[in-house]
Structure formats: structure tokens, C-alpha cells
Length: 152
Image 1 (cartoon, rainbow, N blue to C red):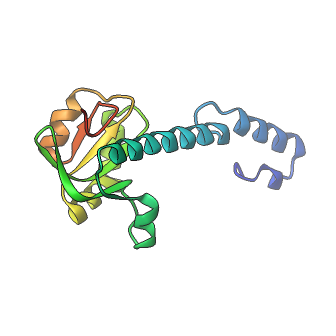
Image 2: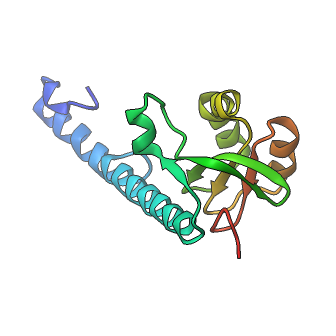
């Protein structure tokens, strides 16, 4: 009923639920649109950085046509970043905390690692310092605070 307040029989309650949903500053539809736009912007920046360095890759849309469900980037030829081999890149336009990393590990990163090998996760808005050593040690995926996966 939260997704379709018009289905609520009490019109006053339906209107209040609708207004609460619209005004939700954390999980409402406006916030979802903003988060999506920020994520798209970060992925476009990542694409541009990879192209500037003449790195060959498949992006998320190309991977979907081949039947893969993500990651954002698969490198056609692996690269080394800070001594770590990188086969895939996942862009996260958010701050990485312990909870979000554990959630993404279970929902995404383990699958990528099992399918493609070690990769790079970019948290564009930083992450808590403990995650860097924890991630490298426990998952063989690598987290970066930098704005680019390949620095000059």
C-alpha cells in the first residue's frame, strides 16, 4: 500500500501516506532518482578514465547482452592497481561502511570474485579505513578511496 497509496480506502490516510512517501528524505522516490543520477555520473567518469588510458573493457550494458548480471566493468585485459590484480571494477557512488560492505559482499562481490577473479571496488565518497585491509585480506577484492581506478 505504500507503493500505491491510492489503494487505501480512507482518502485522507491515502493522501498522508502519499505525502510521507514523497517527502521521505532518505528512501523516497526523489532520493532514489538522485542516487541513481549520482551513480550514473560516477560510472560515466569511470568509463572516461578507462578510455583515457586506452583500457579495453565491457561495461554493464554490454555484459547484460551477454547474460551477465553486472559488475559495472569487466576488463578485457587485467591490470594491476597498487600491486593488486584487477579483472573487474564495481563503482559505488557512496561512502563504504562495514554494513554496506558486508551487504555488497553477500549480494555482489563474492559472485564477481567467483566468476571473474579479484577486482576493484571504488567507493567514490571514501570508506572507513578498516575496510581496506579487511577487504584485501578476506575477499581478495580491493577497495580504493581514489576518484580513479588507475591514477597517473
